Every structure is written in C-alpha cells, then in structure tokens.
Image (cartoon, rainbow, N blue to C red; front, side, top):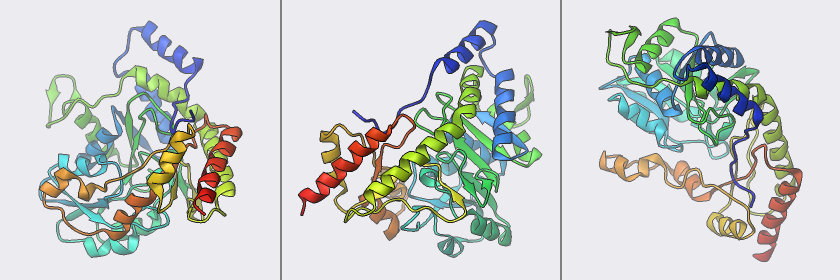
Length: 361
C-alpha cells in the first residue's frame, strides 16, 4: 500500500524525546522556547508562540488581535473546518468568499465585495502548501485597515516572492502528524508584533504572565517540551522533506499532464509550493479513487463538503452559493507525495491513473 500520508520519524526524534524525559521537565519549558526561536528564524518573523494544535494557533491569533463578538472575518470555505470554527470560537462570524479554480485559494478580486463595517480581518488559507495571493490581500487589508491572519497550517516553508508565508501578517501553523513537519500534535503563531505575541502567550496559559496572577480570560493551549523536542528535529529536516515533496510533485506532473481529463496542480510564478498535498482535478474523481484503492494506492479528498455546506453551518443560516468552491469539492483528489514516496511509487501511481484513463476510452 502506498499511503496518502506518513510521518517521517527516526532515531533522532526518539533520542530528542528521551533526552526530555530524562530531564524530568516534560511540560512547557526550555525546549518550547528554543523551538519558538528556531521557527521564528525559519519563517523570517520576529517572534513565535507555540501552542498545542493548529486550531489553537488560529483561535489564539484571532483573540490576540481583539477579534470577537460582532466582528466578521473573511475566509475560505474550501478548507478544513478548523479555519472557520476558530472564528466562531471568538464569537465572530466567518464570511466566505469564493476561491480561484486553478489554485483553490481565495480569489482576491472577490474579497472587497465581502467587506462590511463589521469586517475586522481577512484570513486566507495557503491550501495544500500553495501560497495564496498574499501580496494583493496585504494591500486590501492595509487599504481597509483590516487584520491579516494567514492560515498556513498546510504551508510550512511556502514562499511568495522569496518571503515565507506566515510573515506577511500573523501566521498560524499546524504540526499534526500528517503535516509537512510534525510535533505529534501542536501549532505555532508567527508575528512581528510584540503586543500580539505577549497577548497570545497569555491566552495560551490561563490569561497569565506571572504564575497565579490572571489578567484576562485565557485557556490551556500550551505545547509540551516533548512535542517541541520533536519539532526541533523535524524543523532541521524540513528543507529535505520539502525538496522531496517537490521532486515527487514534479515527477507526477510530468507523468500525468498529458492524460485527458486530469488537471494537475498549478505552480504560481514567484511562489514556492511545498505540496502538503498534490491535488488533481477530475470529473470522475470517485471512480478514480476507487480504482487507485484497488491498486493499493491511498488517496484523499480535501475537502468533499465545503464548510458553508456542513450541517452545523447550515443550522447557523449559511446558504450562499460558492460555485467554484462547490465544483472543486466534487472534483479534487490528492495523491501520495510525501517524502516516503519513492520514484518507483510515482511510476506505480502514474501507470495506474493512465490505465484507468485508457480503460474509459
């Protein structure tokens, strides 16, 4: 079986964890501080605040910017549900704009028409590791005095014009096991604002800067030193992992681009796509997924139901039509591209898709 995702762990992570266990300091401690500094340096930001999940990173980032009841945040419905739920957690309202058909990211041209007096932030998603058109969104945010929060949970190391995502506004990353790097569970906020970082640190630790002195309502969102130790090792490996993902993606595109009915991922100019997922489009998505499963090839559908069509959101009154988003949800299929995929695996995947295509003729 060629799995759709596989965490890349070896003796280096095991030894890093054992070192923390032997130290006896296993909750938030020095390793977390080291990981925050290393990740900030990696993304080119002044500061980073580690938390216990990507969802927590989004939630705390929003709260750190003062977003709450009565506010609106423009974002994408074509994402994992945590993107929009993090807005609901604050008491604010997610407002969905449609995506571009080729990149699956928010269409900047559709953002401004969604802005109202209640709009407080724009939260683009760098979906599948493809940078959103963040330069245009930065301009829109500045023109309308809006906060820019980047959902970079799938985009570790992705770049726009030589600058890493998560450094244009306030970034939020996930380290779930299937991501481009992992801490087992975890997340991190990146920012150039001392005020935002300080508030995020209070939010993650019961509203406290000083032990037993609580200045605001906070949560328990802390990362452990065990997770941070894994993260420090994984961060060093991330460039290698990214190069392998890009290599695999290039081989897949070379093999698949001439197959009728298959649309391969688009690479935007001046951007570095890190291929958290290699996602094709085909009108016969479900049939192809079944065929590949029968051939021992794992696939994923991210995402079969857009957020605005989810039962809970329909209960909240969401009923708009996002035609490009909805069409994408019926056609996308992600193929294995992670660093554990070999050149031989790529041949197997490509041949299986070509055989399926030819069998329909």
